[in-house]
Length: 182
Image (cartoon, rainbow, N blue to C red; front, side, top):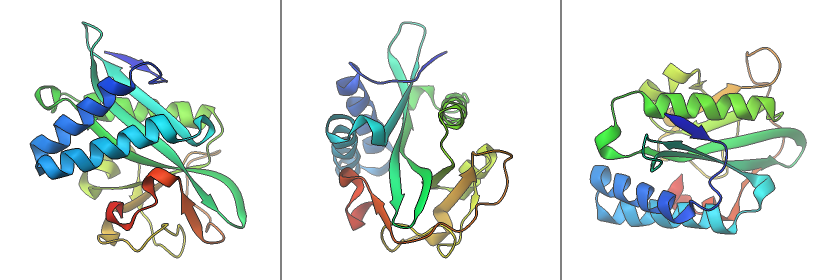
């Protein structure tokens, strides 16, 4: 398995992967929603606000993708990124590709000086990668969360540990600026 630290030139393939994967697991409407989100993230988000990682199979096809986009806190200069969407091709799931891809991405983010990574997903899965449940008083989300138990964070700066409270209201990139995603 080869991991790429960019998705430039593979945007169409990644959008198709995310659309297929989410449609297979959550229905066609969710597939379209997440595919559109991925397309907007990849094509309309400033490169300084987006980190995109891909897993390539033996034949070179993209079998997994993980997108991280910037969260900005009004009175805090730390670099915070939110993971999502992330997916692995349905027939390649259960082989550790997603975990390896996310771990690869987190290491790259730490090397790039990112302070905090957060995600909004299944605690049982993401805690295996070092994420921990986050209180919104410590790490505010950009919108009210429909499942607050899925708000998880990971300190990437210095020695891994607790995340000091982030100061100020939170803003996300334009593509995620919709309560439907939260």
